[in-house]
Length: 373
Image: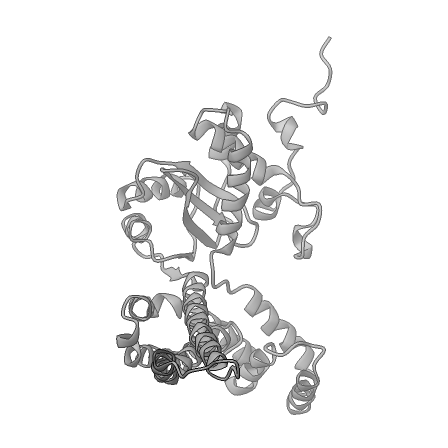
């Protein structure tokens, strides 16, 4: 563990351009985590008693001594996390993580969808009882309950449909990577917030919570679109094309390549652009792939850390044990990956672009060491 900690502290982190930050909980105390979005290199994995701004700032300042100076970071709405970055890196933007807000909107739509189904089921059951020919008398209580359920269904079902539609707009149009420019996204975003405000009185706790979260995080959640706009404008200038054509290529990525709509749109754009279409399409694809919107790699790290700590509860050591775990994650090579540039390389090799010895050899362990006489 001591050898792993020395190696972790000696790595040059200047190759990291976008960092993902989060707070992991493997018990009562938090674990502060940081991951490189390109290489998945974990540069921070530290257990702490607190997760306030001073604690985060201390770790970020220590990492700055190793050369860590990202263009921007991505994190959720954690107050301590963002306060610490403001102290340590006041000029580094912290973009919002779209994963959490989308999950919150989907959960809200699912809850009201179930409520609507429950009301419909109760009403249908009572109507079936009233329609039973074996009944000898009319039950006024059941008739009154059916009337109440019909009145409730008249507003519950439309509300569930509206919330599901708003959640889909957020996911597919506003916070989607393949979408309109930032100005149009902002207008659509404000429209969704206003629609939630109009329905807030029907569920102040859940709808109000989502509305306030969207309203407070607007600039952070839409920060990725400004980065993408700059990249698409740069492509348009370099290829002497209009911004609308380059944006149309971006919107083409919404459709699967096996669909007829995709190929119809592709053929139209190819006819309008000409020979340069293939190169521009590839450039737009790379621009979109290099524009992250969420800190999902940190969530993945959370699941990996949880499994290791759960299976090795008998091991103590706290920071030293996590430092050894961090070293293992960063120096074990990927056997396979959806990203071709990661296959056969370790996160450290991808980040530093330099090879290294087997991780057991680096620790002075394992059969890869020469036998001593």
